[in-house]
Amino acid sequence: MPRINLLPWRDEQRTERRNQFFIALGAAALAAASIILIGNLTFGSIIGHQQDRNRMLQSEIDLLNIKIKEIIDLEDQKDRLLARMEIIEQLQRSRPGIVHVFEELVTTLPNGVFLNEVKQNGSRIEIVGSAESNTRVSALMRNIDGSDWLSSPDLEVVEVKPGAEGSGRRASEFTVFAESLTAKKGEEQEVEEGSE
Image (cartoon, rainbow, N blue to C red; front, top):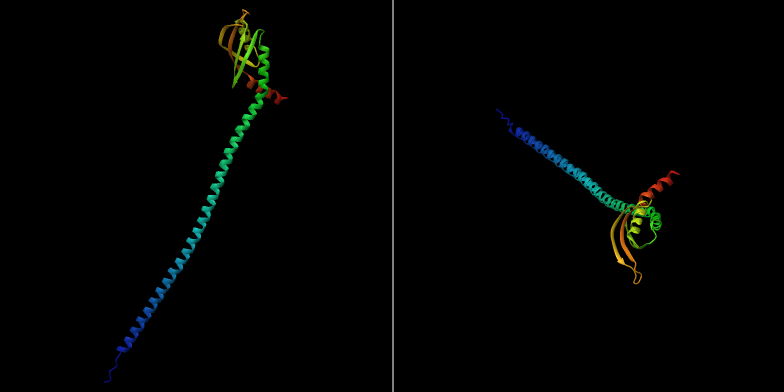
């Protein structure tokens, strides 16, 4: 009886299936490698693009920080200029006041009283002078108290000293402090001028 050997056919079929399996496995590995490569390239591109955007944003932030610093410097400069303008306005408002104070000093000065020195520190005025008697100093203080531009006279020192040689007179040297009302009067005048 003839013998039919089916083994080579099965071996060939097995080999062919194995080859197809390895080809499919290689194709799957190739497809996976290409997907991984494309994924890496895509994510690398996205990351690179985001890094470029981050660098651009950081450079814009740096520019804005420089501009903010300039704005803060300008604000400080503006505050300093406003403070200077306020001082200048105060000086301009008080400028006519000093004229009134000097005029008031002349009108409040009784006969026999002589001024040696007048100093002003803020609204406080120091008046140093001499008088023929203590009563004239009292009259000066009453006149200051009744004045429109001066108030609150305060006698600090009164010394009786001998007058010029041979005259036989004695002089009372005094120091009086008073408050200047120029700021208050200046504001009242501005209000009156503004209402007209």
